Amino acid sequence: MIEFDLASALPRALRLSDMKNLGNDLAKRLKMRQSRSVGVRFVSARDMQTLNRRYRGKNRPTDVLSFAIPDQSSLGDLAICSSYARKNNKNLRGELIRLLAHGVLHLAGFDHATARTEARMFRLQERCISTVLSST
Image 1: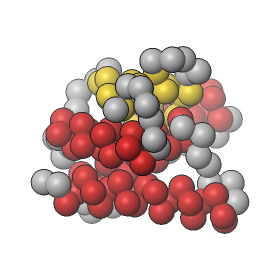
Image 2 (image 1 turned 30 degrees about the horizontal axis):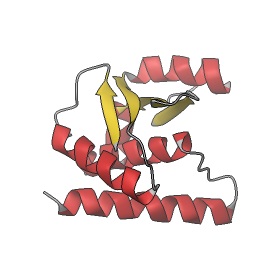
Image 3 (image 1 turned 45 degrees about the vertical axis):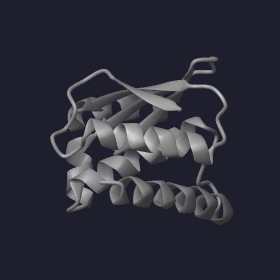
């Protein structure tokens, strides 16, 4: 099971049950045997730009950043910019679930550096989103 630990207020569009369902589905698909936590902070566009500049050298906001923590109990932390996500998608709930899934997959070692790895990662991500959205 993947448990999301919120370090900020939950955006209105997202439900705690969405996060719980996503955590369960991701853990199952990733064949995780032990429970792991993922810290989640929803940040402003300004804060996201600062984080993106500091950690990736890109002076602009982005939608999600992943910070891996090699630990037995935690996969790492995610920073998600709700306002950036809102600009890119009319279904904010679905987009926030997508960003959570995307970030966790990065923490689990997935990337989208090549067409092949991108297809694999995005296919898994979209399956998780479909499962969560259809469970409510």
